Length: 372
Image 1: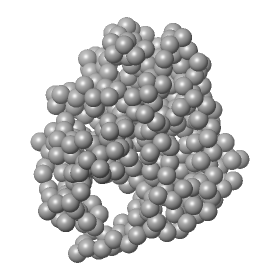
Image 2: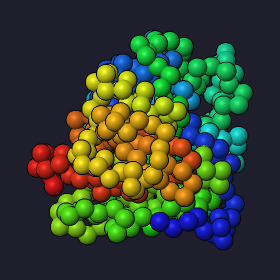
Image 3: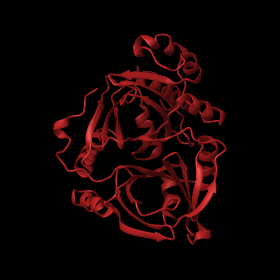
């Protein structure tokens, strides 16, 4: 693991993006997807856009849990771009949006630095105020959206109407910790450079095939971060191994590079995972032997190890503290997007000590699918 390189942090003046704003999924059935995230993950449905609001070709539901915003959008016509996206990729992330106080400035600087414009800056208005939005292209068919909402008080954005449908249980998830991209062979450095040159981000962590490998597969990863560390974007690419890695499986099923998983921070991972499991969310598991020597590796922790073992929660430590994490299985039919639940107790790493156990669990699923 390499430490951030202070000498390269400010080679390019960073954009003003301050944090994640929301993540938008394009899905085959937005109503059912909204119901899933409400009942399984505890997201409240807070806003809606569709035929009843004057939009006749697609429908969107905005959901919120803590500071996390998700949007699920489905097409109402077979020739709509959302329908084409779903045909190619299945349900997947189309937009990773960042909150910024300067949408026009960030968009202009990004395009001047070589980004491809996807949507020119617009000012959106309704009775709740004004918001600003612009978009640039990223890896595969994914886009980055700049959102300015300092002068907006509505539940999501103009164009959406309030529609509050509370989740049965909420409050156990807090914020987006990081969003992970999978790219193809030898593409990682291209996208590292993209975030350095376009966004002014810096390399926060680096993992190679010595860090992330099993008997059969391997991958490489670099984590790009904003200067304030609120936005972290790991980028994964395959590395040579005996069999097809999870990154290759993802790209094959998704049809291009794309978002592999969204990590959600929680202040209480035991409560969160217990609730998710009760709600029917499928979670990855590791062999019981993982816990036999765990205290030798991570030292003392505050949580009850027996409870962590029962819930299959993984533990790792770095020089700043420790973390607890677990991963869901894919949340759609294709083995593509999944979620991570993470609780940080000082650690700012990504669970390097758990990589082998995690990826062996994923490989067991690959083998069951016949894609390893």
